[in-house]
Length: 190
Image 1 (cartoon, rainbow, N blue to C red):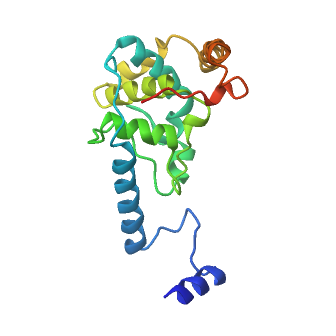
Image 2: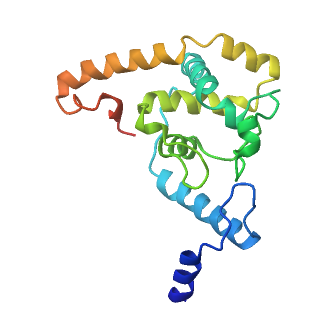
């Protein structure tokens, strides 16, 4: 079996092009691997008590508009060129989901291999990721008009939000001394 797999990989016969869907067996295997891994790795994450806070949701709206709409769209949005080219397709987050807040947090923070979902935890601290989770959890309840209003009422643009986060983390770094060289990688306990 190992020899067969080795030859299969070496020959390069499997089409990994995003425009050639996996066979049903490969797709279901990868799907099960992804779902079980997300459940396993998110099992000990505890969401913050203020996840439904309107300020957190508003901050998440701004981040979502900047970082997520190209792939995941939003209420009333037409498919983008990017979203149409992804395989597997990115989930449309305006549709109801049975994912827990902990699972959503883990996915946003760590990304998902073989799906084009980036690991936002490399550049965003946990609080910003929880803001995104807070907003994502409201998406399926928003009409297209409410969605546009939420984005319009977001507190700041992405660059301002990131500068504010850097300032907070640099100040915290000086206090703790442990994160001074890598302020973007500051992590909060979850």
